[in-house]
Image 1: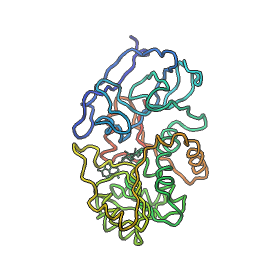
Image 2: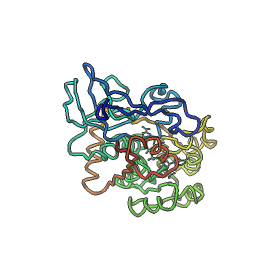
Image 3: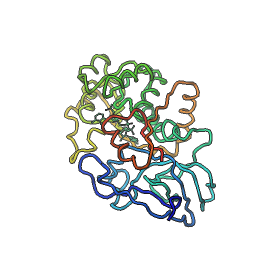
Image 4: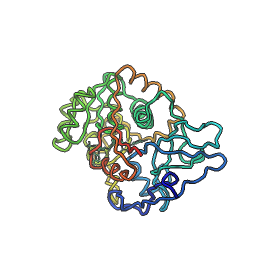
Length: 336
Ligand SMILES: NC(=O)c1ccc[n+]([C@@H]2O[C@H](COP(=O)([O-])OP(=O)(O)OC[C@H]3O[C@@H](n4cnc5c(N)ncnc54)[C@H](OP(=O)(O)O)[C@@H]3O)[C@@H](O)[C@H]2O)c1
């Protein structure tokens, strides 16, 4: 087998306890598979690192749990090498759940569709602001959170992939935006680079107190990526008719047992509030609408896309760990 014919793969080896590390996976080198009728062969150029991979490794979620022995499930962007699907041609760029590997055989019967990447969109942007990440922020904030001009919006994990875009969309929408992030440097970045109105360093400041100071009239929309105590602090400061968007809860993903729900959830009652979760895949039929709007924001210079790229498929587990240590700034990718 020459190196050109080898497919390097990260296989899922066991359910993680605590953080998902390379020890929970297995590195193998196998021959490249042949696509059958109705399939394509893709050479991955970028693979994605997402907190949800930790959830897929643990249990059934909105997708069934990963099975031991399968290729580590991951979004990826690659080039079609062989197509036995009429809608894709050799050389075309596509996105899908192609996994942490060099080459994937994929079809349209999987958990997530194969999507064409427009030629006008740079690859890293297609995996970030003009991809799933951007759509998550867009639909989460505007459809689920229904953020309106003049409202106070708070975003957690605000310097991360989804949070940084959600906060910027909120600014574009005419909201006052407060970001919560770990560390002074990320907080400075939110204010100086992304135009947030205020930032809270949850590692160095009291979130409850700072939310009271930065949102004196209460929080109208809380875009939650973190859960746990941050969710409780946001509930405590909820404005009348406030909305809480449950995008994610990364603070609990590595825990063996889910953390107890917010003890002050009755704030939803006193404030006539609403808390609603969503999964971006439900909005895929409306992808074009979001991607057009996001592309226009970028063209007008109102939306910055931040990507954080590590090189080498072998470094994918280390890249995933950065999401949990907070080392990443913006969308964490691995260039294969
Ligand atoms: N509902 C959906 O359809 C959907 C789609 C995509 C993503 N999500 C969710 O959105 C959230 C963000 O995902 P992402 O892909 O954009 O990742 P990300 O925000 O780029 O990376 C995760 C960030 O979370 C923060 N973090 C990690 N552990 C934390 C903890 N214990 N407490 C507080 N903050 C912590 C870190 O930032 P700091 O340095 O600030 O700590 C880190 O940068 C996740 O909860 C994910 O599951 C949901």
